[in-house]
Image 1: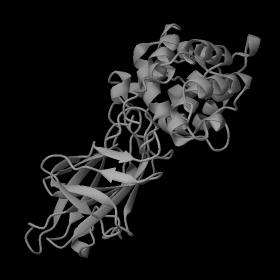
Image 2: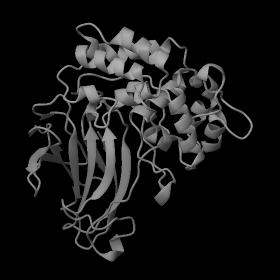
Image 3: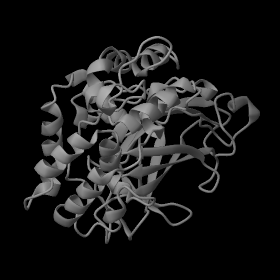
Length: 372
């Protein structure tokens, strides 16, 4: 579903000492959310704009967090993980307020979505994971406000993003921090918690958040199936569709990520794979390779039949394993694809990089940018 642009203001934090009325205080002394956030800024390299903004606005953001989410988030940070990682890993237990939301939302807005009623259960639909992540981070009062305001009317599905954002903005949250948290909570970056492997790349801003800078990112190493002299930045084996470099998971609300590799002459090809989830922004698998090389993008829907129409200038192709796709030199975006029988275009994306025009014996490093 590529026409419902989900712009949800989601906020999260970590647990701290519990104060009056069951609310967490930002904490002082040797504990507390805000102290944990400040300690985690710059944990995986230079501090980003978003890490600094969220930490600086911690006491204000705490006003909308559920206690359970706050406590779990602080525990994650205290374990030495990055802020971005903890946004992606933390959830609180659903409450009666969440059950009431699911009943209203599934009955009025998302009717026909298979498994919608299990949105807060053990097997939530992938397309509703951003909504789940948002609401499990918020206190019951705010969940109830969103339920009352945003789950009725003929267009409540299409209007849900705008409606939920309006409810949150009514709490006078800092715009920059909200934009950052939206991206990290609803479209968690792929950076590992311990910065393993020297991951330094960061995700680009989500178009749905008004241009906030991401806190985390994704990384990895790609490469060729060539000679040892060309394996300096490669991850082998990656020379076929069944031996690929896994790039993890992206959503169409994520920004772009980057990986580097090497091509060993005209006969070498490097393969990558990532899973793209349709989270109601704009699903459009895209890849760019620099310097120019031939790049192919093959798609397989997780549900339903896969239909692909290649853009102008691209060549239709089918992968060795039978997946439909397109090939082009330099940059390629496939916006005209469809997964039949479902409203969510959740896919496996296979990427092949090659340069059949390369000189024999050449060893060419490249940078591959990819997004969903």
